[in-house]
Image (cartoon, rainbow, N blue to C red; front, side, top):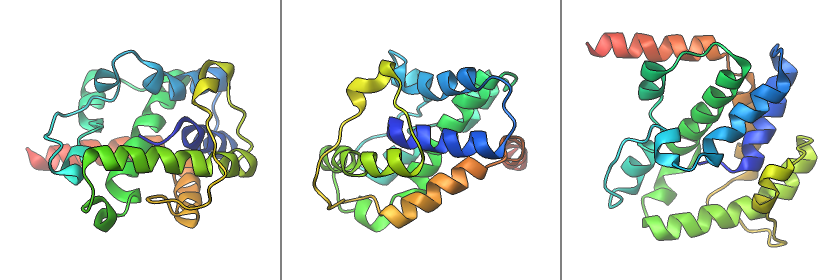
Length: 182
């Protein structure tokens, strides 16, 4: 999953580029997915064996399952969806497949959380992220400069692109893809 700070940066970009009537509900939706007691359910995870890390990560979020069980009507729902799309894209397209293929799950987790701590302050400053009190315990930073898995330039592009996404078009693409499978 992308970090809370990355999710909030994307939410900030999204709010600047799209009309959202209730910004607080949107942010609550963005945060709710990772604050849920059962992250497997809140991310609509498809279980796969961790021995193939890339396959495991690509199953961490099932947008198909989410859209089959939910409609996206409210600003809260839009926040949930942008969170899930972000996690899906983060795992399937953002992370470098060559680097991931060399890691086991435990090493991956250590590296990715290390990288979040390295980039958090940078992201907060650049994207004007204010960390709500409810997630302040997750707002960790370290002074180290080296990231193992996250490229800062690529991360900036990812945050901007995710913030520009058109949710209706993304939903339509998923539905169209599913209809072609049938």
